[in-house]
Image (cartoon, rainbow, N blue to C red; front, side, top):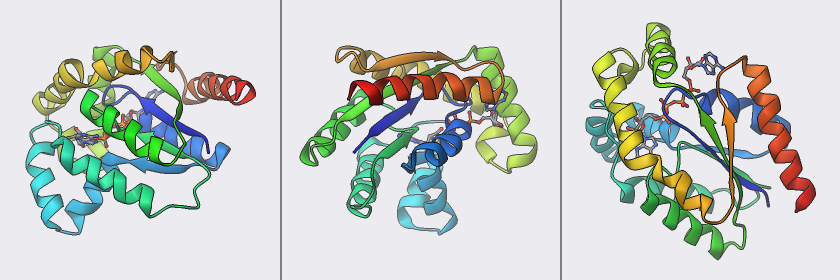
Length: 194
Ligand code: B4P
């Protein structure tokens, strides 16, 4: 099993690159943002609780997303590997994920961390807001709140994985194909070592 994390601030290209990476490597895509938006559109109690945080640009509580990932792992026993997109977003989520994967004897192989400037992030998300219908992309204050949440709570996740030497930092500005090539170079190197 080959498990990887695509990491980065909101708007860094995680969703965009994940679509291409799962095609190339046949991984199961687990995006907590997508899972939460599905819960919201199905009007589940979990979705309703999550919506109040997401609408303010805040992170959803750890126990909610950890539970969702636990069920997704349980529901995909045949997967040949997982691409985690937008998860973990706190050190507590990272520790919980490590535990869940340890039980399956399938640790994280690599954390790919996309690096993008704050101005570029705001520009991309505002731009996506014009067409996505995502309420968290249409208001600049909410976009900035999401970036603040990243800086105060999520950036530390890269440091958590640094202690195990698992992080590869990749420039997330440039064309989508150039960034994809940089990501696949790192994955292919890791696969050869494994
Ligand atoms: P997510 O769904 O994860 O959303 P995101 O971080 O905003 O988007 P992403 O990074 O995937 O977007 P992309 O750059 O691909 O989270 C939404 C919310 O859910 C969070 O705010 C939080 O409330 C909650 N949540 C999710 N997971 C959670 C967790 N684990 N714990 C707690 N709460 C959680 O796309 C952005 C735009 O950039 C697109 O328009 C794209 O076309 C464009 N783009 C991409 N690459 C580009 C490039 N190279 N050049 C120019 N534009 C580019």
